[in-house]
Length: 374
Image (cartoon, rainbow, N blue to C red; front, side):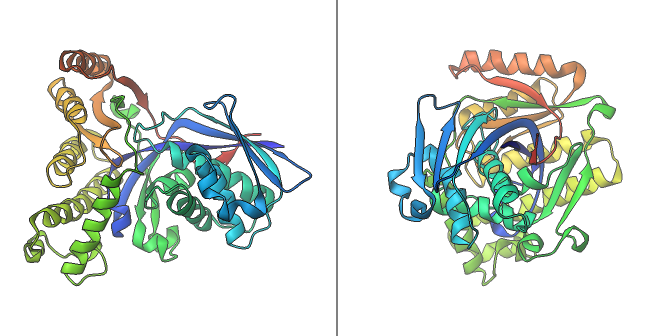
């Protein structure tokens, strides 16, 4: 019947700011998850995945809302999207979903959002064409939060749906979730052409998977909420100055809040540099500062991520940082094209000396968001 794709993402800057009503600046990856759909005559939904050979999960559309605990964890993402469409009153018929993902799982590159958004876009086109992009993003987010148990914000799903080729997506999460459109300042496509400047964005997958369904991510969210409450504010987006954080008695909670507040400043600074057409090398130090904040204040980095970042910078990168929720996954490094192989080799050699798994490295460019391909 058709095939739809949605990309993974890397965040140029802006980690753990989305669920604090802040700012983010992702790009979509050329790596995608594919969702093929064949309609059925009955009311059954089946899911198969090329990454799960021999495993087919079937359920009645009408029974999905109460079937979560009987469904394997991997299948809760696509079937959660179906369940969320139904919960919102959309009529979804039977279908066979065939999935194939090229986004590395557990690498902090949003493979789960790519999966959820590819399914969501297919279902919208086939069964609910009046659903807007904003609603589509919220459906995919709700499916991950409520059905799969992954407590994400809207960053990953927004990147998968809204990003365009050749651009970074500047997203004001508060404005977007309150209903403002692009003209109202909710989001903006900012040109991000590293090739013109002789640069590349190198992704370093540490091979140590992160898992958002584990407790560390949820604990950070709770601490951010506690920080805002201690300040009497709706969210950390509303903090006027880092100095205001001195009112938070708990030192650990204060550090969590400091990361979010300073990260928002970093996102705005990088976005402004790119809007102005400045040499992208100028954002390198901001990326590195973001990693230090994630490492020291938010404490979501790992020895492997720290090694990747430090080695990349020592080998000539203009800046580097971990990306994603943390506790494993990937880092990015901004490098001269002529030095990409040198940096990648240096990271691999240092990982070998440190006893870490061999990292996977690859260059990415800003790609298109979710779309139908046939």
